Amino acid sequence: MAATGAAGTVANVFPFRDARAAPDPVLEAGPGAHGPLPVPLVLDNGSFQARAGWACPGPDPGPEPRLQFRAVCARGRGGARGGAGPQVGNALGSLEPLRWMLRSPFDRNVPVNLELQELLLDYSFQHLGVSSQGCVDHPIVLTEAVCNPLYSRQMMSELLFECYGIPKVAYGIDSLFSFYHNKPKNLISSGLIISSGYQCTHILPILEGRLDAKNCKRINLGGSQAAGYLQRLLQLKYPGHLAAITLSRMEEILHEHSYVAEDYVEELQKWQCPDYYENNVHKMQLPFSSKLLGSTLSSEEKQERRQQQLRRLQELNARRREEKLQLDQERLDRLLYVQELLEDGQMDQFHKALVELNMDSPEELQSYIQKLSSAVEQAKQKILHTEVTLEVDVVDSKPETPDLEQLEPSLEDVESIHDFEPLFSEETPEAEKPVTTVQPVFNLAAYHQLFVGTERIRAPEIIFQPSLIGEEQAGIAETLQYILDRYSKDIQDLLVQNVFLTGGNMMYPGMKGRIEKELLEMRPFQSAFKVQLASNPVLDAWYGARDWALDHLDDDEVWITRKEYEEKGGEYLKEHCASNIYVPIRLPKQASRFSDAQAPGRGSGASGGSAGEQA
Image (spheres, rainbow, N blue to C red):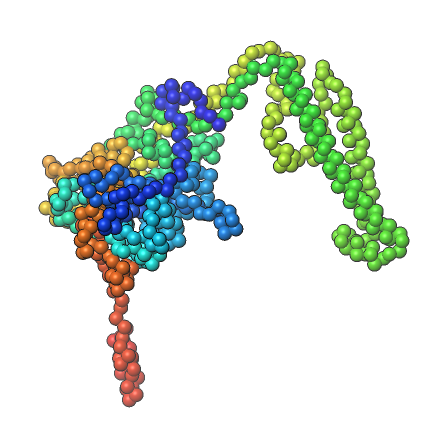
């Protein structure tokens, strides 16, 4: 399969890259990771991509995370029987052939599958070169979801302390790490964070440097839903290319060819203009085979090729007949042997053989023998006739069409059959004209192009208008307005002075202008606001977690140690500037045994009153 070579020279034609992930090498920890104190490991545990690296102290803490891979796993068939074991992340290569086998530890953006999460952590520690035996002797900074359920944190703490034996851990929110990475150090600020990822979009108010968890809101839409929506749009538009319109290619279109319209309705009206459409439509070139784009064979060579194909079909048909004749002959011999048992008077063996043949009477046996004998004779005659036909050299006469009945090629013949050209050509041999090149009826390259027009803005628009895909949720603008209305006017003015955008789903061109337009419509006349996009919306969460780990390396007030885990439980959390708010589990008070026991002299009325008070 190869794309057309002229795709790069035609205006607005873009070939799919179909990037294949390269397996990650097993890295060395490096000299900075073996200092007097254990160096923290920073893990950005995202639902789309996991990022892992070291937080090495010093003037140069290191480049971007040393390990980045898709947070998916695929189990091979029969891993316990010597086959391939589970594959993780970049070891999978291309995801599309394994799409039906992919598993993720996440339910939306919350890890819920402990076994799959362990596979992701094993992959991270192994490829980062963690050399400690039997445990991971490094502090870990791990990102978690906004308002993460206590059960999920308990599961993660249990995995880290019990399975890996880490000394201490700190949890933080990825978008808050990104927020503090993009502001001056030691500056306590307030603001609104709009974080949109692969599964969810969050709007988080920050007051005096701390998360206001009571007014956080989540929209259950992100890059995953946008890719699925784009796939449905293009599959409906091009039903002839259903298999070629894959999720991986839709994600590539979203990342490289989509944008957010500042005014959605006005932008759709622009697309109605033919000139605007022609100048802005992106033609995505699907891979295709160029074998059918013409031929330079002469008429004699075509005729000779047809005759060769005809002979191969005849030989294949004859071989199938011989195999069927052999099977019929063996069955006929078996039936004749059973008939001889009847003639020799061996009735017990005869009836036993009839039962094995699934027959009820000697008459049925005789009828089947006659039919099978006739079929065997006819097959022998056809084989003799075919052998005579193959010896005849037909060059000028039109070859006789072979008998193709019962012609069902087996698996070993499929490869040779796929190489055949059509047996009956549209051109008749008598009217054939000597031509050097046969021009195709249509442009095959153009047939394999996807014209992506309004789809470029319709897919990203779902986080502003979830009703486009039938979701009964509020969009970003409505959710922003709802959150601001819960505060006083002074706090509203304070929050909108620092609206911060982060997350991979915020990287569309035009996203910042669209948020500014929505704020301009909802804020009072001549009021001020400021919108800032993260310097690197994808990696700033990891950079912020690394900077936080270096700043709080010796601060015991933010790390959860193994002793605290054993005393206070896995759901325990120490709060800091980038963490969730810890809400401990409050179990209902159990009634004392003395109140449950009733005095023997009390009547039913007193007993009923006591029961009512307990209820």
